[in-house]
Image (cartoon, rainbow, N blue to C red; front, side, top):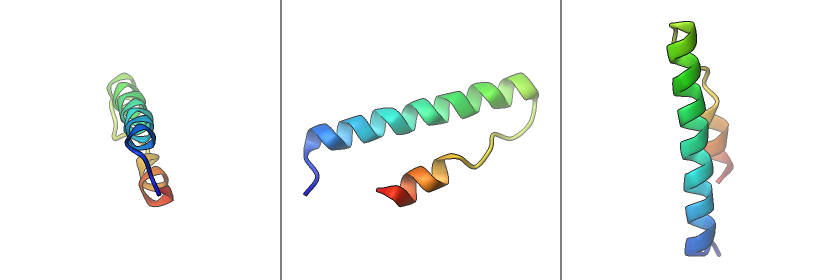
Length: 43
């Protein structure tokens, strides 16, 4: 059973990963690595 607090933490962690990938994409000038996929399938 997943509580609302756990969902919130997961969403924040996922948002952080997406933000890091986006900043890496902007810095390198190419598509971000497919890191969020394992995060989504993990939960």
